[in-house]
Amino acid sequence: MFKSVFTKYITAFMLIIIFSFAMMISIITSIVNTYSVQVKEDIVSRAAQTAAEYIEEQIAATGLSSFGMLADIHRDRVQPMLDIMASQTDDILLLVTDNSGRILLTGGEDSAAYAGRSVPKTLMDEINNGVEIRQMDALDGLFNNPYLIYATPIFVGDYSVAGTVFVCSSSNSLYPLIEVMIKTVIMASLWVALAALIAVYFISDRIISPLKAMSRAAKSFAAGKFDVRVPVTGRDEVAELAVAFNHMADSLSNLETLRSSFMANVSHDLRTPMTTISGFIDGMLAGAIPPEKHDYYLGIIAAEVKRLARLVASLLDISRMQAGDRKFNMTPFDICEMGRQIIISFEQKLEAKHLDVEFACDEDKMFVLADHDAIYQIFYNICDNAVKFSREGGVYRVSLHAREKDGKVQVTVFNEGQGIAPDDIPFVFERFYKSDKSRGLDKTGVGLGLYIAKTIIAAHKEEIWAESEYGQNCAFHFTLTPTYAPLKEAHPRA
Image 1: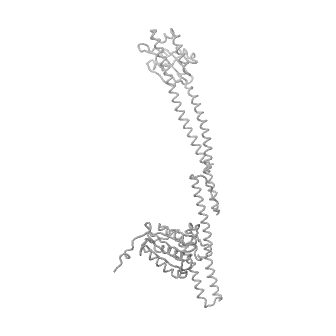
Image 2: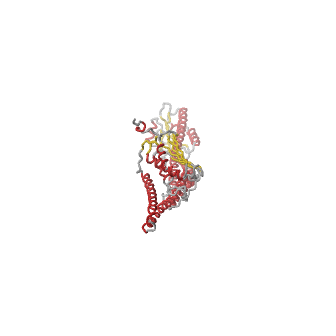
Image 3: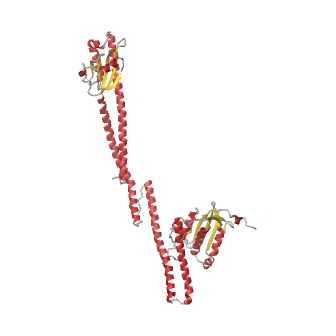
């Protein structure tokens, strides 16, 4: 029942609303009840005191010593006053007793039923001592239900108690107000809960729908379908999540494309040399190739074996770096001298394509702190690509430049050639990516060299990037951390 996020959300929200309104009803009921009781107490206390003062005035005016005598002689003076006071306030009952507790006069609705009855002696003993009484009581069965009772003594001239005035109010009169209030709050709560339920339904649907779409898309990804996208509506956090999910889907789609391309490239690069090697060896063994040409074809076989070795080495190198097994030995070395050595190693290729070479460093020696062999691998690979993709002819050039910029040593390798298409620039450092998909120029690569370069540079906490004017030129840049020269280099022996 509660497996759905939508159900959990609705249930939790409704429970919060119900609990909140229940607490509100309890608090409001307590406040209203307390206030009503206080108001009722004020009314009955003022009525009791007023009646007692009036009777005291009447006793003083007649010179009598007890209320019992006044009630018999001047009943016509006191009774109207009691009736008037009872009529001014709803739901009160006035009782006037003598010192023994016998009820002599009454005022209020149905008050005649109490005439001649008596108030409990225990209560009268307290009042006869001059104590005012305020309490909820049924007076030992005088009332069917507890009444709010306020009793005040009637004093004569020498401050002796001549009788007592009781003003009583039924506690049942408080319940209708509380019931009406509770019903009103409950009705308001139901309307609020209904409105909240509708609002929560649409809000939850707005949140849950994209999540369901993401779940369906994820299942499609698991099935190998990467063309599903999640609709993006609004600018809230859910919309941002949908945008991020779609970006992830694009990355997965691109990765799948690269993986397929890689498999095709690796299959081709493995099959081609193996077919060549197998064909030539079979030809030699069968005698189809004359002995005098064995050396020539063995040279081709050796080249193909080296090509296979380079491919396997690249794959193993990537595997080691991804597993974190490749460790880098950070030592200072001269990046300018490394550039000179690499240019010398490309001398034959440069001459074969009749390329001009430019080499420039801001200083004669520029020392950096990095892994020498790893940087050599990057530098050599970038230079190899620069020569490979350069146009032939003496008017075209390949240049290497090392400069200090923003606290780093920036190395740039530039060549004039077809360059890289703008759509390919963001992907040149991805695994298995080859911008020369036709293999017109890149007949030996499998799209791993630049990925390895980026991984090595990232491990050095440096940056590498490419810039290109498509159809004209291309430049690759990477940064290294400068350092001081090694001691034996800085202070050579005489």
